[in-house]
Length: 287
Image 1 (cartoon, rainbow, N blue to C red):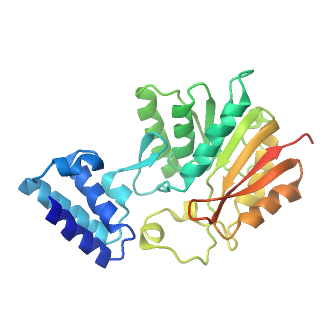
Image 2 (spheres, rainbow, N blue to C red):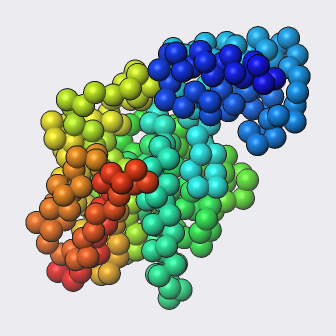
């Protein structure tokens, strides 16, 4: 087992994969059907397993995303089905998810907390929040029909496993009447929208496999976020909180959008684990 993984690691490193050791082990764990930490308790591979593993390593060396090869991506305590046509959730978004859970703790128990996830993609944030907080009423909005199908698939799977069902909506997050029945009733809004500037240079895993619509937010990366601020302001109740993920070049830009719109206070930029600007939060005040 060890020499097979070492050989795979070297192949992935030569291909420019950023995490060759982790990916070699995760692919092996996938083929063997075990957790990565238990990988070395399986000392031998069958010829069939070896063949399958080598095929997956070869495709990863072609920069096919790891998550497309395993068919899953993690968010919080859940695993999501992902593949062609839907944005693969990134580890950085775990920080936004953790922030949302902390804010939900502060909501109190006077009413059932209401959460809206704008640009839900695979349903990652919405479903992770629903899993962690079964008392919450979670709404998720997605424009792209292919991504919405992935979100629906994930929502049905987790609902079948006992999670509180979420409400999925097909819609444009910049539409003035989106979810109008929730105006002024939402406690938390989260969003991981398309935010990459069109001129950005991306790794092949992203540029060649994530859907363009889920990635790019116009020349400055703010074409979706800019009009979405009005939607957020409309949905949030007084003292409700919002968090919007953004490109690492746009922390001050997104904060300025909240401040310029008005009706928000406590606008704060949050970094990711690498210290790069990653998401901005804001509190809704009375008009």
